[in-house]
Length: 270
Length: 199
Image (cartoon, rainbow over all chains, first blue to last red; front, side, top):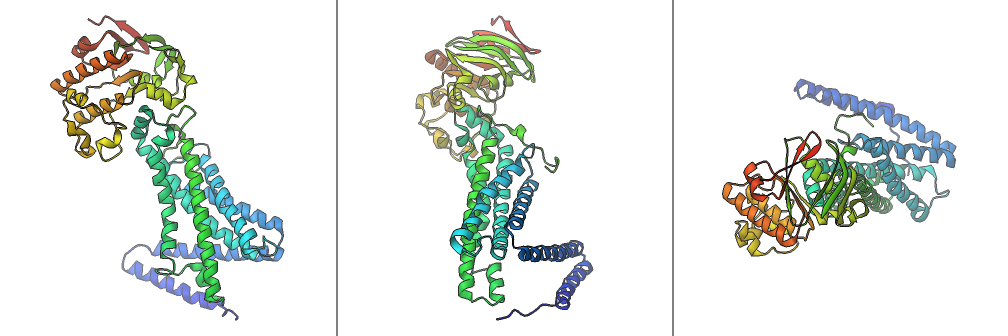
């Protein structure tokens, strides 16, 4: 079954609808037209560029190029984690924690799915590896970013409680335990909710895409289940690693709360 | 006995002093003179220079949480993180202690949200001594109390400190209180501990 071609003219029609929406919003003085147009333009440009990159990657088909692409993706995801923090760790530690957590979870679960479960030949075949890695990293990144932000912010807000518990002789793990659970939960909830409502409220994007391109629903659903389980595992381990490393880093060897290791908001980007 | 040698904090020049078992040393000084920082250093909550000993045990050679179980700092503002008062106590305290602090036996069942600042302060003292400390660091333990409760808390603390032989450092501003409770009186002034006559 061949996919129906979408021409640039067809895309133009969709773009016209966005411009219409912007015009209506401008007319009604709702003030989102400007941002909407910029975001739409970014979508068009970024996705067109990534199409070029993927085409080149598919043509080259060498392990080195795919590994390079994967490395860049992991580093960008780590940087994104750091940039979403209200109170970053000093000296780029948020970037390091984010990158490490994402590498440990999102990256290794992807490699596991490729090597053991899907098994394309070669295992790093870009048609499978790159989209899979992209979805894994995107979700893991969000989980890690949300949970780290929650952890550092709540440690800042509840400094007095943490220190009072330390004064009563609790270990640092126990003194920050309730905040750690809270951070873990806030990082995992979107993924858990997505699994709970999949197929009922929303049809997941990848499955929809595969069905559009002619895959049978039965196979598309199996891919989607695999992806969602992999995302849950990746996000879970990534969030866990991030929360454990970051909470350890909030204390020193004498189990003192070290909020001086956090920057104030609006500090430098790194 | 709690002993510190060349203890140095952000606003304390190297000081060497000893707190004897079962005796109360009152610590006074202008706000910002570093009284709380001295207490925090003794409990190892802030980085500091110098050595602290509890009898023969060296602070830096003891796991930090164990040290803080022994050297118990009670902050001026107590914190409560669970909904019920009881959740903050590992074991039920003796009703006699509750009554001595002018609290009813049922105080343990109160929700934290209904506690007044004075009730919080008294319950925090009870909580602090309920897990067998070996030394007490009290940061203005009667700051939020009216005169009746203040005297009751003083009597109860003195009784407990004598009975358990706890070396005690007690931050106090009120001259009358210092007269009532102090065995020794230190004044913290420009980074130095100055020994004053207690009476």
